[in-house]
Image (tube, rainbow, N blue to C red; front, side):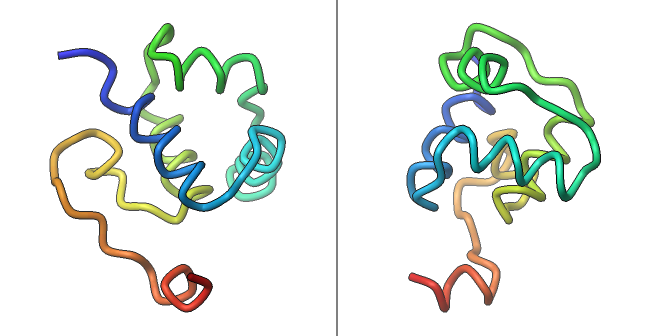
Amino acid sequence: MGNVVGKRVRELRLRRALTLQELHERIRHESGFVISQPTLTRIEKQERSVYDFEVVALARALRADARWLLGMIDELAEPPEVASEQ
């Protein structure tokens, strides 16, 4: 099994119509630390593993269930604020 998180981060970022820059900014704003755009690219390309605290930050920024990012569940329930935007 490859890096499930990277594939799902890319899928959800595109579904949310976010650029890498916007995701980077959301992570910084909501979690207080930086995951650079080059690092996000490497994560999405499954070239870099993801630390546990990064999974939490990505889940917050993407408004997603961390279990879905980790491949533990198959269905992603959309939070009310995301569902109303679509």
